[in-house]
Length: 205
Image 1 (cartoon, rainbow, N blue to C red):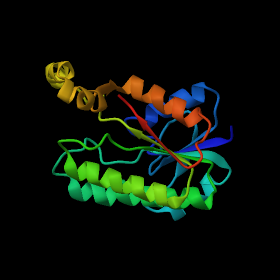
Image 2 (image 1 turned 90 degrees about the horizontal axis):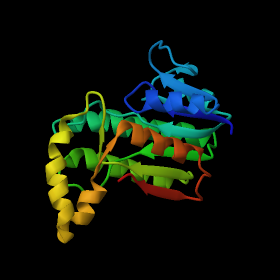
Image 3 (image 1 turned 90 degrees about the vertical axis):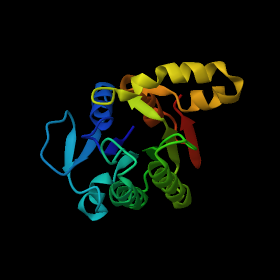
Image 4 (image 1 turned 180 degrees about the horizontal axis):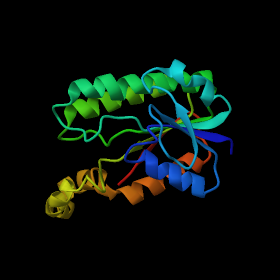
């Protein structure tokens, strides 16, 4: 496989994904605004401006977009549009210019009863990818448990109860909690899989 370009490589999921892919023997390019120590080629650029990194995407086979507002919350609607949506548009632009074979994007499970602004922006991002013509995989986890992301453990009794009721069982499974290790493993499998012809949506229950 040719190189894998990762936007958002320094974040919660990205830093772990880089390590896993390098351990698998793959060439990885990681986009970062600052100097950082990663076990791969670090590309200095701005995720909100494709012109700062697009030339480094050329020659890669896959583009993984993981840029997003840290610790999403209902009151961060403006940030979702200024960071999550804006960076996705730039990533799609760079991926198309480089004729990337496989674009991978982490969205969010929807519909959902909470975080409406966040879900709305992620759905808009999915539409942009679908309209781009790129061969793409979209993953839809709900909440990913890990260091600094533990509060949702308190919801486990509610998930258990919802799973016992036929009317709410499917929703409980679709919006299930996953660990960061499970999410990273799923990402690795998707990145290394044969690119789809068109759009592939992968739930992460």
